[in-house]
Each structure stands twice: as structure tokens, then as C-alpha cells.
Image (cartoon, rainbow, N blue to C red; front, side, top):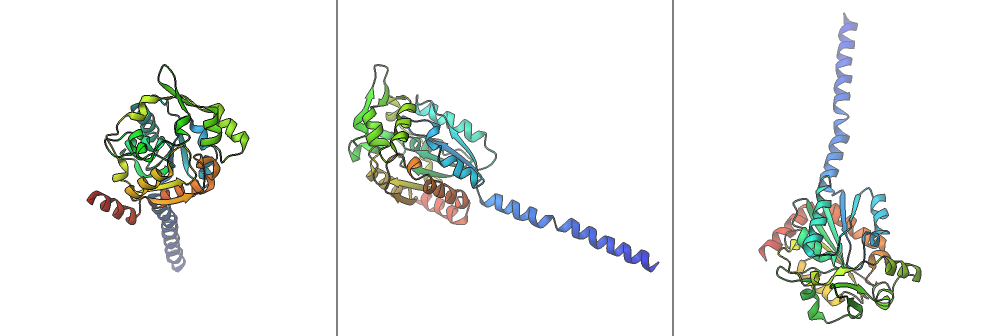
Amino acid sequence: MFHDVFYSALSTVFNLAFAILPAAPLFALKRSSASTVKNIVLVHGAFADGSSWAKVIPLLQEMGYHVAAVQNPMTSLADEVAFTKRIIALQDGPVILVGHSWGGAVITQAGDDPKVAGLVYVAAYAPEVGQSANDASSPFGWTEGQKQIRVDSDKFATVTSEGMLDDIAEGLPMAERMLALAVQGQSFGPMFDEKLTVAAWKTRPTWAVISAKDRMVPPAMEEAVAKRMGAVTITLPTCHMVILQEPAKVAAVIDQAAKTALSKNSTALIAEKLKQ
């Protein structure tokens, strides 16, 4: 009888142990998932496509993130936002939304999506409500890159070879500059004058990468909007294509955003923005 009682008690202890032990790692996993955003959505700029993120994507994937690059049609702000929101909708959980160049205007409008936990602007526009991309840029004067934009009879814009090689991608090896030239797409000119109705950076924690040697988007504008947004900011001595020139540093900023966007500090930051 003693043996029966002993083994019964021992069996109960083991059953309790096996019931409790798996709960600890599962709880830790859930807590980690809740505090880190695992989905990254990347929005490319004008005269480019999703391949402009080719160096950033594998770095983020190696960190364990699920990454999706939007292939925007460059036909209107409304189309850009619709394409971006469709990709956001496909993500399982919260999203860090990242925009390069013109893509900053897109994420400013699309970033009010409930799934978006944070915004990252990379050498990007960040207009205010009622502003267009051109409105945001014009006070800072024409850059050498903007002077190389040509618009055809159908109002679609491209950048000259000189503009792409010497003003947009000049910080890259020549082979990469030539590739950027080869894959550039046309962008519908009037979309740069479309007014935004949302400024998502007002209600989301925000990060910004400033390209100090940018010859396409005015660095002074990048600095001014980063300050206005209250963004966590890093400045790099890079060309406009910082995402190809310094992909590891760009990926590190995105990683920081993903790890902190849901923190208490970020919640406090949003509350402070809403007071302004």
C-alpha cells in the first residue's frame, strides 16, 4: 500500500511538473512577441521599385522579421496608398511601415492603418495635412536631382541619366548606379501635387534617417520634418540612395523601431504629440 501511495504521489508531482514547465517558455515567447513588431512593410520612392530595398531586406530577414516590399504603380497618391494598405492587410499582426523618398508621403497618408505601430522615414518626404510632397519640398529650393526630372506629353516623369548617376545614386559603385538607371520607372507628375488628408506621424512613434549628402531630396527638409515629427533621428553622410549605400545602418534603425514601437515610452511620445 505504501508503494502504491508513493508512486501515486510521485506521478502527481511529475504530471504537475510537465504541466507547468512548458508554460514558462510559452509565456516568455508571448511576451516577446507582444513587445516586438515582427512585420516590416517597405515603400519605395519615385523613379524606383521594390528592388531598391534589395540590400535591406535580407538583413531584416536574418534578424527574424517578416518583410514585404510594396510594388507601387506610381500613378497617383490614392493608388500608392491603396497598394500599400493591401500589403499591410496581409500582415499577421502589427507593422512597422517604412518609406524612402516619395514613399514617405505614402506612409504619411497610409500610416493611420490600425495595424501600423510605427513609422520610419528614410531620406523621405513627410508632409503635413493639406500639403503635397512638392509643397513640403519647395521652401528648400530645387535640388540638382530635381532639376533633372523630365515630364512627357502624358505627364509621366523620369530622371535623366545624369540625374540618376550623379545626383540620386552617386554614392554607389558605378555598376549599381547603372542598375538603378535601368530599373527606374515612370512616375505620374501630378501626384507630387496631391494634398495629403492624413499625417500619421502625429499619432505614431516615428524614426528618421537623414542623408546629409542627398542631392535629390533637400537634406534641410529632411532635418526640418524629422524635428517637426519628434522623430528619433540618425544622420548619415550618404547619397539619396542611403538604403543601398548604408543598408546595415538603415536596417538597424528599422530594428530599433520594431523593438520599441510598442513600449511605454512610445505610448508616452504619442500622448505628447497629441497635446501639440
